[in-house]
Length: 213
Image (cartoon, rainbow, N blue to C red; front, side, top):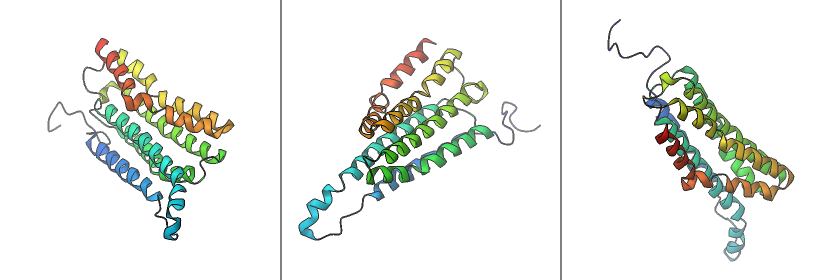
């Protein structure tokens, strides 16, 4: 064997940097594409204000989706800070998540066009639930394989963080169920779920566990 004896990488296993670059690129593209769903009104000038008001549902769907994707990207970024190696299953789990993320402009456009339709609300919620479920599975997989993690990540932190990783999926699942009964309740749920992540409350809780473990 040649090279650095400390290097335990084998074919299919290596640095996670390329995975992180691909992930950042996909998120950047998708978060740009969702704004393209907002079309400039093409009617007469005297109807411009009326036409702009018709864009309100699309603008709200854009804002909700951008925040949701931002929270997901931040969560992925937080996870990646603990990962020092990426193996074959981790890469393909990431690709599965990115494949679902790439479809977000479709479900966001559907919600923007039919914001009160039960089908559109449920499709949007199911989509977000699946994306966050795969995101949770990513951390679940890594947390049970300490060799992929940087040094200093305790068993206690891995235990509690793997449970916390599925919290967003559970939240979106509940919101989707509400949306199947009452679309407005589902929309409110989609607005509420990201709050702990955007405010940082979720990550302060994880940091507290990390410091105590």
